[in-house]
Each structure stands twice: as structure tokens, then as C-alpha cells.
Image 1 (cartoon, rainbow, N blue to C red):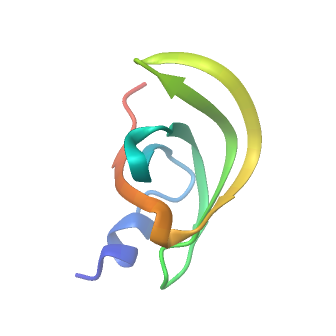
Image 2: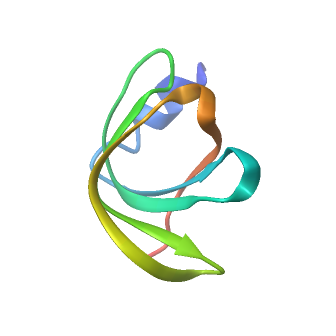
Length: 74
């Protein structure tokens, strides 16, 4: 199964995404993903050390800046 197909199974679910350089961890509702792993999320927050630091709202992430994606635990 292609990674983008696995991630598409999480649409409308809460996901956690780690960005390159380990600086950013974002959590929000996955709204769409394409074949390049570009991701659109809504109700997104930034996390540092597991704590929510700021609300970002709707964001578009380029696939080449994403290190890992997982389904977030509520």
C-alpha cells in the first residue's frame, strides 16, 4: 500500500505530524492529502514538549518537509 493511501484512511481524523529539523510538531484534523504527501489540516495546533503552544487553524504542509505522520490519541 502506498503511504499516501494509508494517510488517506485518516481523513477527518486527528493526526500528529512531525516536521523536518524536529522543530515543529503539529496536531489537527486531516482534511486532504495528495500523491506528493502535501497535507491540508484544519483546527491545527503547534506542540512543544507535548504541550499546546499556539493555535494555527487551517494549514497546508508540503510533503517534502514532513518526517512522520501518525493518528493522534484523543
